Image (tube, rainbow over all chains, first blue to last red; front, side, top):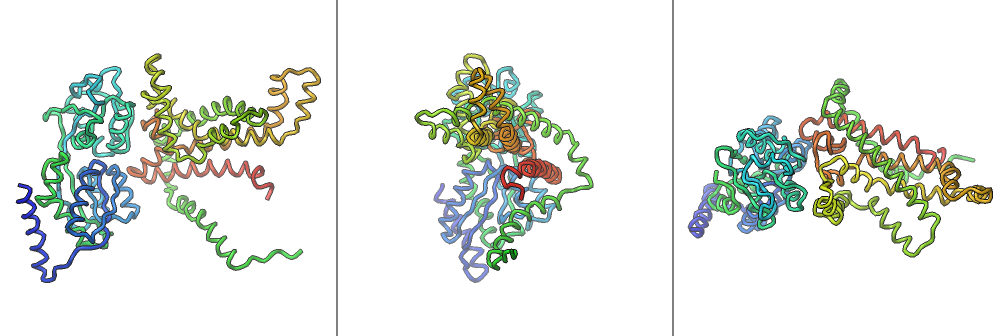
Length: 250
Length: 261
């Protein structure tokens, strides 16, 4: 199965080069600005892309999506931007900083993150409002924070987070440190944290599906490598990598 | 005496050195939207951050005075083994990255921390995500500035006044409160001002240890950082406020550091 998809990608990557006549090997440094929730999956994607094109080097910048947007707006040297929602992507587009139109490359869902073994016995969103439960989330401008508020609203649960963290990674680390009892993060974050946390599923009726768009930025000096990487992310092999981290395919 | 001539190389490098500091300040002033600066400053989220910052930084300064002046006195007057080491450890936050300070505070006063775990299980008190947490983070980072300044003041003061008071029958506490403290008042004031300014600007330890929530732990520096993402104009205005405060403190302390140049 994997061998088949690998073969498919191998064919896919040679075809466009062949059609251009000269098989130009991709090279250079690719500066990748990606949402914090993509940290592990994009490092893995970058590593396998680097295996295929050893002369392409990656520079990663993983932050909360609005932080990345602010950095891009202030002129940070970014080539490719992967956002955790379409609202922040639209901001980059309306500022005229995106080259071409973004592609949705993955979906994600929310999950409640708690300490290992769920010592507070959290069974659903309604428990987050229980007295004695310290609930935190990402801030309202961070996609994860916005989605968390949407999920709580859908479930009719009224709870104010004790802290509005700057990205999902800090929500997870506050849970790991035991400072907070529960947070709402992405399914992929719970999976990535492994045994250091436990997850509590949110029913589909209350859950929110996050769309992840990716785009090349106008400031990029290496459009060929950017496009190569984006097609890799949306290829069968790239999608398989993303799925292995718990993302839903595009 | 003829004025000294500046060698070209030194002049150019000095000008570059100065410009390196001046240009960012100019940038901040130029980009500040003066037309609606007042509106930005009086926006509810800004007012909340300002209020919290004032409360937290003055509380931190008060705690630093209460604990830091005695500490400085011990450093200046008492010889004991390990004094240098202890002084080094208590001034560490001056050079430590504030985020590291925040992590250390979590491991000490967090819910699972050395002291915090006991506070939580015994009294049900948790410090992270509270204004007390923000005050503690600010105190941790800012108090060393007060301790060092006051210690220097204590070392340079004329101790004969204390001895005179003693021979006239004053007890140790009276000497300390009626003679020593008034004599070191300038150092005390300078130390408190430095400490307050540093507390006001604290970011890393606060966001790490106390978290971020408007009105509870979201002080001005945190608001500046987060507003840059949503409302850059407001963050420029708030930055300028912090800048003016810092300039004010430095100018009023100028005589201490630079003489009357």
